Image 1 (cartoon, rainbow, N blue to C red):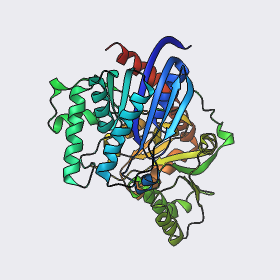
Image 2 (image 1 turned 90 degrees about the horizontal axis):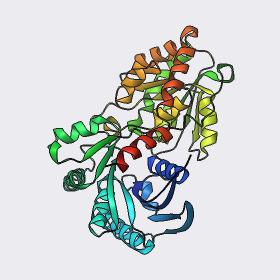
Image 3 (image 1 turned 45 degrees about the vertical axis):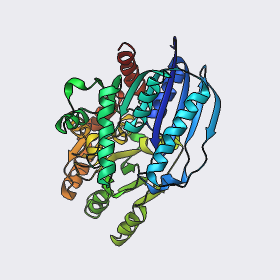
Image 4 (image 1 turned 90 degrees about the vertical axis):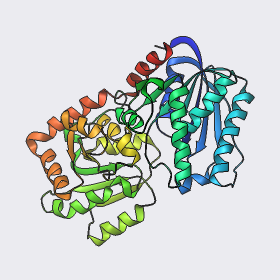
Length: 388
């Protein structure tokens, strides 16, 4: 049932691709509130492919898309591109002529924009939405210092802070942030669409199909699964490994699979249609998230969405002990948390596939996934935020 209270919202983010929590928040608001939304997206320059994209915005009036536009594609040094982002955010916010009840700033730069707009009287309340953390965000020490200084400023001057996991808060405090100065923190884990996804019965799936979904980068640790396959092939008949996604490490993975003589690895590339992705996931047996162990990585301090999508599809998850959710998955027996170790990976696959175990793991995964439906997560977080 839609909340009839009228609210106006601005959402500003930097992104690699058109997906993620900002889009889920936008869609949740459009579905559940009487709302006007200005949605601003800038390219996230940490990956080289992002330089091919331009800043853009969408404006929804009374829940209907009425305006959208792409910025001029600038070719400038990084620091000037970030200044460009601020100028476009300022321009579009003023051009639309709307004042906003809530401004969601994804990452410190966007939250900083929101705080300035609040000073100008364009915004009532700023939510700093921190979806990840890394001690070494930038290789350049000066840029890294500026980034974390802005992060501290946002924690002190935003109205509310949304974070995915307590690890981020713990790291802020360990690096010198003053607890008394920080605004109220609300835990907003990454979510899924458990209530929408129709899972398949065990007889409809191929249990021996291991699946990976996500970006193809070295830090994702997919090498571990590929290196474990030769040993598993001797023990599990009709075993397959399906990889969905694209990225700079894709060709090296293909070369590795070829060098190991593996003919049961399928590289499907990036699939934009989420229904096709979910059809593959729900028809598979086990999902993997074998992140490389690195406490400087974004994954260690973030609440990654990949495991949540797996759980929503009823997939037992084999995950390395990197993100905090790995330990929750282990506790709920919705999968197995391992070290980055070939033998442990192989043992986890064999354990889950045992006839007496598989249905238990699968049911536990589906049950755990229900806790993370976006509608539940956002309803709770927004109710807390609106009363502050």
